[in-house]
Image 1 (cartoon, helix red, strand yellow):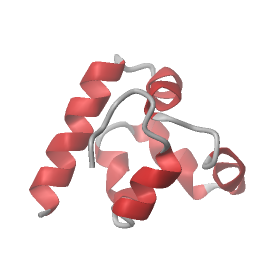
Image 2: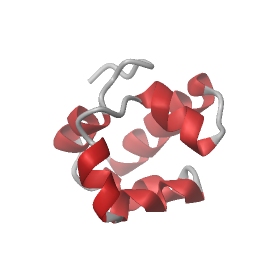
Image 3: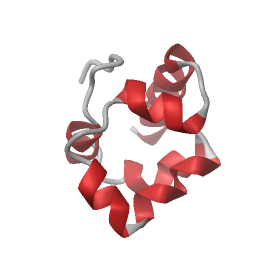
Length: 73
């Protein structure tokens, strides 16, 4: 799966279901994925929006996600 700023969080979690637990390693703010609000946001959120919420550069976030995915395989 190619990761870009437009990649939807929902698609990312469909492809890598384990990522919901592991993504906290990238940024503590992703603990919000374990709240009821996360279910509402899943369909709308993309990597660009995630980077904004986590106060991370989008390219850094994409790189961290790629590293996490690679380490899991």
